[in-house]
Amino acid sequence: AEKVAAKHFGTFRKAKNTTQKISDYNKARQIRRKQQLESHRISENIPKFLDTKDNPRTIKEYKTHLDFLVSSTKDLHISKLALKHLYKAQSELKEGTRTHNTICKYFRTIRAFVNFMIKYDEKDEYLNLIKVQQHLSDFVKTIEKENHYFDRKDYDQIRTYLAPHPQGDIMLTYVEFALHTGARLSECLKGSINPKEEGFEWEFVGKMGVKHRRFLDQDLCNKWLLLQDHLQKDEDGIIDELSRINLSNLMSKNFGYAAKRLRLFKTPQFLATQ
Image (cartoon, rainbow, N blue to C red):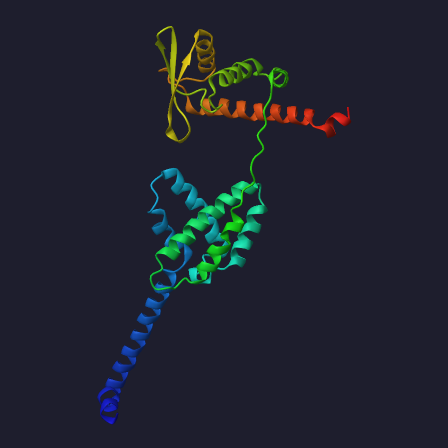
C-alpha cells in the first residue's frame, strides 16, 4: 500500500495527475451512465419499434399514439412504466373530443409497443412490463358501433334537408351518384371514365390505395361529369385538388347533418314533443 501510495501520490505532481485521472474517470463514468439511462427511455425505443412496420400510414398513426405516451409520462424510463401511468394517459385522452373507440386505438398501439419491448428484453430489465401487458386488454375494449339504415321514405326526407342549401342541386346529384355506385363520398370525385361496351367504366383509387372499377350507364356518367364540372381547374384543365377536397368535405358534413336530423326526427323523445 505504501509503494502504491508513493507511486501515485509520492510527490505533488504525481498526486495532482492521479487526482485528475480519478476525476476524468468519474466524469466519463457519469456520462456513460447517463447515456445508458437515456437509452431506456420510451422515446429512445420508439424508432426500433417503428422499424418493424412497413405501411407508412400505420407508422404515422403509431408514432402519433406513442408520442402522446411520451408526453403523458414525461418520457419515463421503461422500467418505471406502470398501470398508474396508463390510467393517467387514458384520463387525458378522455378530456378531448376523442371517441371511446379512438382512445382504444391509442392503447392498441401501446400494447403492441409493450409486447415488442418484452420480446426483445434479453437482460430482463423490463419485468414491470409483464404486469402492464396483462392489464392492457382492459384498455382496448371497443364499443360496437350501431348501424343505421334508411328506406326510400327516409332518403326522400334527407333530400328535403339538402335541397335548400345554396349548393343543393349539386349535393343531390352527388348523393344520388354515391348511392347508385356504392362509392364513398370522398371517392366520388376521383378517377376517370372511359367508354366500354354499351356504357362507361369508371376507375378510381379508394381507401388504402385500393383500385376500383364501376360500370356506369349514361345517366350516371352524366352525373359524374356534372360533379367534375363543378370543380375548379387550372389553365391546362387539371382539377385543383383543394377544390375536390372542399366539395367532398362539404358533402360529407351536410349529409351527416341531414342524417342526424333524420335520426332525431325518428326518436320517440322527439316525436312526443310534437
